Image (tube, rainbow, N blue to C red; front, side, top):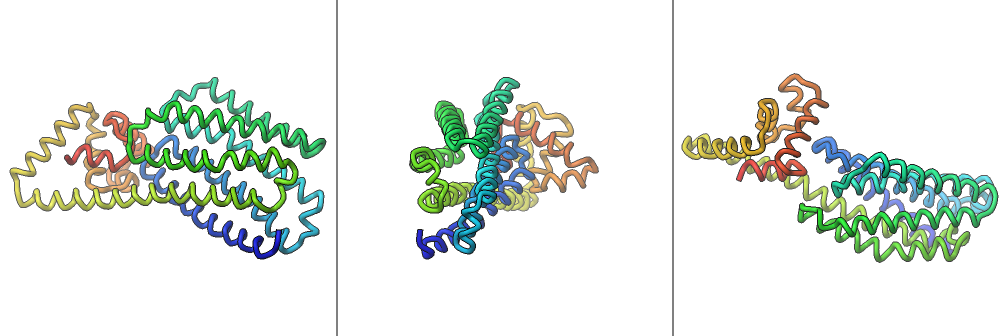
Length: 320
């Protein structure tokens, strides 16, 4: 690989990390607002994916600056060890995220199965590093077969996703994965040790990472814009209602009817009123002088009883 391509890849990695960590930051903010169970596993997955690419970027940087260091046994051992750790973590957190995202039962059995798969992959990876590289290839095969199984589970349960926007996002991510994933398998298994060198695999990985995170950034940006719009619309509606007592009574009556239909407790109704007024969970906890964790639990119960997944859907449900 020539140095021009190398520095081009390095810039691509830098751009990828900017996009990736923006997606992580937005995801963390989304989780703080919504407290969605699957999101914390997805955030760990994003961190792990970023770590995996960071390892490749370090290898690329070493190739461009100190090629002799890259060829050393210590560097290669650390490289493959770090790679094994990242891939093993992904084998657990990807299904943990997917099962919760699709509302599938994550029982003790599933938990143990994926822990065993993850640990087995890691152990074989370490044995491959210390003894024969062919064993490392076996661990890679386990990884890619596991990902294919997880992907099939996602396809079979795709119809269970009710939110049309999320369904569209999942479809795009699925298409991206279908296109790029076979290329990664070809590069990492067919080429074996050579695939660990700098080159085509870096191009594939960084493109996959950038496109994946761009799609998620698009969705998260849409979510935050919707939150702002919903808050403005609701505040605007409140102003108009102040000038028209009949409309206000009618609107409040509609909200009360919906509240009764979802069987909210007195405290949940109180918290709901603040949520509809655009208050954050933290602001509600300060107003009511209760812990943020208590508010988060109430909000989660309100979402479940109302049949919504986020604040945008909640506002839309109660302000029709």
